[in-house]
Image 1 (cartoon, rainbow, N blue to C red):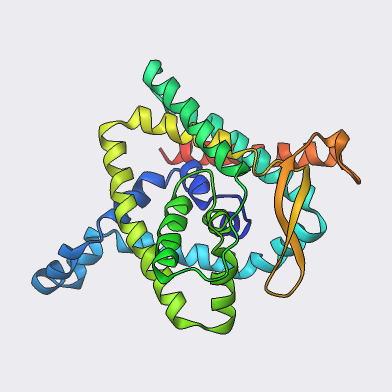
Image 2: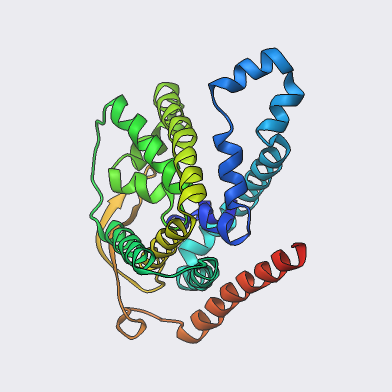
Length: 290
């Protein structure tokens, strides 16, 4: 999940889903609420720890942190020097996850098909939106940005960082982190916590009441998000990052034979197959555990 979250456009929620921990993650997060404080006073830390599945959350967060710290530089290097091969690997990985999630739908009917198509359309539409450019966003807007970004992060498909880019608050938040603007960091963090605790409850309820339809919607969402991680892109507009360097602002997917430069088609196919194989291996491991 940490490795996926480092790459803008890939959701850690997708990895959580295909590794079989998604529903447990939702249940654990949604168990954290105001009643947790009263439970702490009445029953002590051990009861609270058990109710929120504390060991699971700590180990997961530790794994994400280790991955982000250890892989951030390497993935940043690959994004700059071997973007086609990196995106090909993640494209194969996410494509396989579509099959993996889809197989968990036990009953196909009109509602599940419509939900899948709607999810695919919404996710695809998000990937082609032109990002906003905002230099002076209000604190309320930054709070909302944090809430929406964290919701996207736990949804399979679109990454939280990509949502921040679309909202035009990515640069503001990044600069706040670099300049240690604790007011903005606190507001965004509070928004993220609010969004995480509330949205996880909604998703948990959907899984309990409408599991097949929810799975169909998530499958569609992942299908639509494939446009974002298509390896061959044409840059339509650029922006300056916090270091004054030009980075792509708006891109569109093109065929490998229309790509200006070396398409690396053969290696791209190999890396996509490798990503696909990773999901097959995870599926086998999950089956063994069961």
